Amino acid sequence: MLRYPLERLEQIYLRAFDSEILRRIVRNSSYLVSATVFSAAMGMVQGAFQARALGAAGIGLFAAMGTFTNVLNRFTAFRIDELVVKFVRLYEERKQLQQAAAVFKLAALLEMGGSLAAFLLILWLAPLGVRLFSDQPGVEALFILYGSLVLINVFFDSSDGILQVFNRFDAKSVIDVLQSIVRLGATVFVFFTGGGLMEMILAELAGRLVRSLGIMVVALATARKQWGPSWWRTPLSVLRKDRRNLLTFAFSTNLSATVSLVAKDSEDLWVNGFLGNVIGGYYNVARTLIGFLQIPVSPLPSTTYPELSRAVAQDDWKTVRKVLRRGSLLASLYSLPVTTGLILFGRWAIALYAGEEFLPAYLPLVILLFGYSFVNVFYWNRAALLAFNRPLYPTLVNFIGMLLKVAGIFLLAGFGAVAFAALLAGYYIFTVGLAVVRVTQDLRVHLAPAKARA
Image (cartoon, rainbow, N blue to C red; front, side):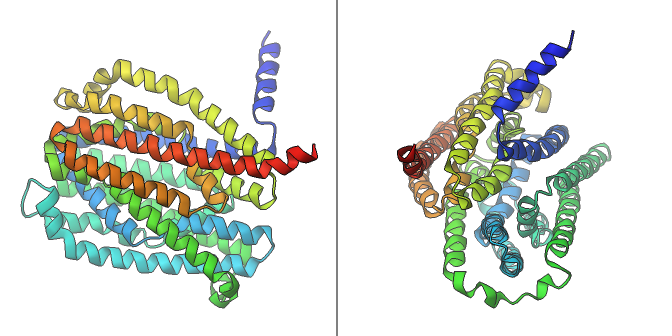
């Protein structure tokens, strides 16, 4: 009796994912989705304990500290994982193994220097962070303690890029699960022993340490396997011919990252700075619940980008088009029902997750859902532009969006968290929409010769 339905499902799967690239993306994503679902569940439980232990003001300050650290870390970074994926994959396709090893070495050195610079900035700017983003004076030491995360992640992004290039998503998934278990276990221990904000920070850092060490060890082992035990001795001079392309890509993605920091990745700082830690706590809970929407989609860009880069390198534009179309369909099948569910049952979800104290988070949650749903459906927009060798285009678009959003903050901040949610959702729709238009136009140009031959 089950044979026909099972055969039918197999036919649908083969039709939807009728190329090896699509199946590889789904297979690699399945590792990450499994880990992401588990990690997200652990994260939700962890967040619930944090919210009940710290209250709205405490969770707002905790989020501000995390964002403060992330902003300064990203400011000195180069989105180095994207550079690793782009150029290591390119050299691997060309069988230029020395150059591939040199890119990883260069990326790791750049990231280590950036991590040290970020920590020095945190030490210097912690007093300013307290004045701007905290309702509690005298917590500079806690800002610095959280900031030690940048030293824990000394060359994490470079290592993560290597795992993407060589499809080590299975190992990455296991490590993500382990760090989630450590973070949750430490947080629960802090909760039941009556710990406060400092102990919650230490619990967070413990999990991040497990993840960072795990990813870096696996990446180094993978590099040794691919390029031999002396790969790290590869002279950087082998990259001399491509130095300009490497630097252009690195600095353009770094500029793009800096724009993103101001426009979206520093959201908790904007809200806490303008509205205080209590409203910041409400807003953080709304953004945390958006995690339900992002769970299975968030791994897709990192698994799609290497495959798009490979297809572009092979001049296989029909496969590129198919990957983008099927990817959007796959993301829509999940995103639209979940968005509807969160709109209908959002109040109940907030009360269950963080307590009735956080119910003011509902309206910002609903507004944010529209922006994040749009991003989900076109999750591939940045990955496609980078694969098409257009790293400057998203930077320009994001810069324009950033200017509009920041202007909106100063004009509309008086309307509270609802205004911040509307501005962030609008930023996403504006920037992603223009990126999708650019990708579509480029794809049409590349497909034209094939249509003419047909």
